Image 1 (tube, helix red, strand yellow):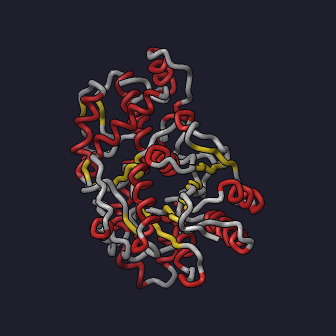
Image 2: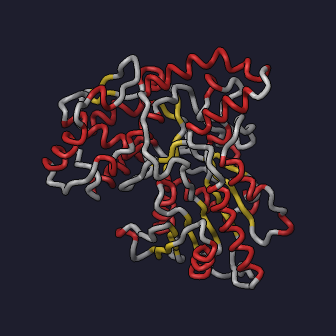
Image 3: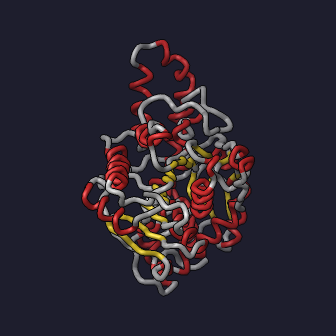
Length: 413
């Protein structure tokens, strides 16, 4: 049974991802209590090895999940795991300008969908699948296995769990659709904004908590929804910071200015982003604040930002001129042989070989540049309840770039 007087034992699930790694780093730097990092590899950042215990588990294997929970015996679980529906399959990147044009052309037809039987399901099903939001039940099964294991251990008297903090995202409310595809797109996005049309694995994952009856669950829960997550580590397929750093290195090595890949419309749009460590801070706050339990929270660094505020500073950091083309640009438009250019930049910096794909999530960068509309969050409810932490977007990005350079993932600026 839970012991309210015992020190907390923190378990991060999905610790190898952008958000999970930031959660682990936040906990390692903010508490002397035990911290456990669970992933399929069990790997722990060498810089944190003296503070963090790595655990291996496959969330689709009930026995390994129960074994990990017995080893950690957590009081708080931070769930940041997800399996992208396309994991393990070849990725095909569309040109960002092509994707932007397709969205603009779709806008006049969006209001007509409700008049055609079955059209909305077909239309949004395809779009959400392209956005990685349609799976075959793996993500619901993963958190389901975890909660089943928690219930089993509680029934055995072998659980001290008091809170589960779940990470999902703003795409639950359609930030991936925007007004071009969904006329009812909310601005700003609030925790109680309606769910987007069509299917999404986010729904099933969140419902695994929303469906719990408070009086019959011996632990509390909270849900946390960022938009872009700012974190940094090698091999992360969804890290915008990794992508930005590698983009700058490639263009500089090729003798080009720092060309903004999203074109004029994306350059002017407002974006929400959250430092992964700030997400961790909000999840810890929710676990310690009874009034924060049983609900969802939007999470961001503070006021939304524009690339127009970031890009000149990024160019200055790399000693480059910068420019914004009218239309979005793909890497192939600018650098003919990026692997060769990347290898040359690493050799010049006396760094060992590292495949470009391990440092630069190019597909994610191109997909991100589709967002030419404003994405803003209502963060006031968390502030009103006592969570008022903010971060400067530029400071966060620069701090993370420095981390990547220190680890040898990126050549130095």
